[in-house]
Each structure stands twice: as structure tokens, then as C-alpha cells.
Image (cartoon, rainbow, N blue to C red):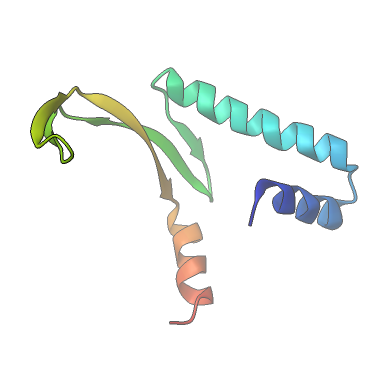
Length: 95
């Protein structure tokens, strides 16, 4: 599902006009990005957690040049679903 499809789904389920939904969805994404950029976590009860995780410094390889480079420590965004969310997915998807 794309962002546009998600916005249309919310419009269909709530009856709120599309521009308001689009503004709200984009504002939520901006808040998540800006909060995580400040190295803060976001906890949404019943949904999950957006947490910036620290990656340690390590050596990497540039295959084209056959050389090694030092990759400095950095943060990556992660999402951990809540138990309720994970259980719903486990029960709904058939293998």
C-alpha cells in the first residue's frame, strides 16, 4: 500500500475530506522523522515503537575498488511492533 492508497482508505473509512487526511498523515510522518532525528523514541500503545538504534563503528568493503573503509558509528530508524499488533498479523496471514 502506498501513502496515497492509505490516505484514500482513511477517507473512505472516516468520511473526512481528503485534504485534511493528507495533511494529518504528512504531519504525523514529519513528527516521527523529526523526533527520531533528535534521538528520541516514539511509543504508540497497541501499535508499536519507533526507536533510533545505534550502530557501532565497523570496517566495510568497496567491492569495485577492492578496498576497505571505516564506517563510523551512526543511528538507524527501527520499528518494533507491539505484541497486540504482531499477534494480529500472525493470525491473519496464511503461509
